Image (cartoon, rainbow, N blue to C red; front, side, top):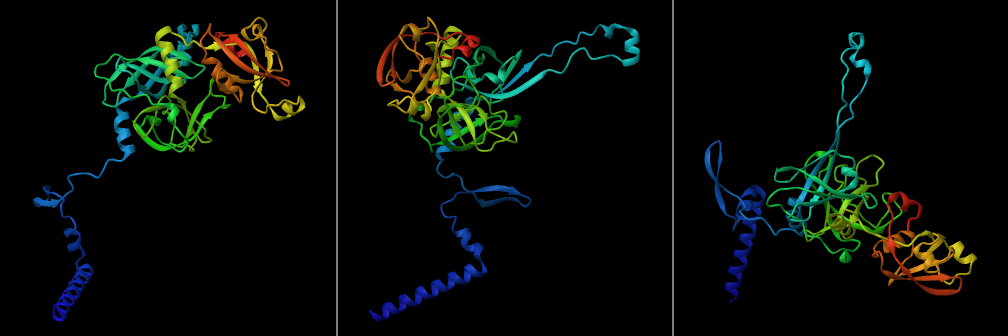
Length: 393
């Protein structure tokens, strides 16, 4: 037995020594042997067909890779052009004027804007930003497969910066709409669009914050903040979750240089879907309105009037004969709840009221001094933008 163990130990020692020598002077021999299980195929070089070891199968597909593959075909580039106004100069017809100054151009150069869009239905409906197509006379859409089509403007909603386009093409790829309620800070996301018109580009990041308001970008703000790189040309493009579902429409960046600084904002898909459905069905977006002037409740005001609440929206004005006035709301009231949703700031109040259906009744929780009241308000339809600016809710 001792003799067998001696032979075994000597064999192992010799094998280790051989491996050390080979690894030192001929390391490529070990690399070649490590390709066990990798298929070989003939590739051509200057000497002819030589069998070279090449991997025929890739590793496991990463979640973000699968998400990009699933969503990318439905992301398009949008080119919006505005015809220039003709230069009507009566002197241009004067032969002496032309003699001294030459033939003057009769038209300026057209204005061209570049952005992105997302195909959300097989019928050809696309979501993009209002500021991408605002004032455009011609809108061209280019798909990732190279096809191009002229887009029809279905409608726009400047108050949310959403626009809906429609194209007429067969076999359109679409993206699945995600569930914004499941989105959390820290979730991985992809931004897909056409930055700087270089072609479709995918960048990755995380959800940095939810419910961003007070940015002054639009009337109704409830933005998703992300650090995925978003640059000019990404506007109207897609913010995608790890399952390849659309969770937002990229709309703006915070930047001092014009490029990405890691702070981008996207319109949540639930808001974009609500706007799209209204524009497609009615040609406009229907929102609720109660006729009040709100402002955030600051701690000093709450302390001065000895209010038992520290969060809510202070009503500074109530439109005479408006819905809130008819329900008994008064200046100085603090709105703390709309239906079953608590409100802590003006943006939340505006979004909650806008989501109400006109002619429906809503129960609004109000704090008036030391009294907690519930007012039943018959919701009206939000006026057009000019009137809405004077009476935002």
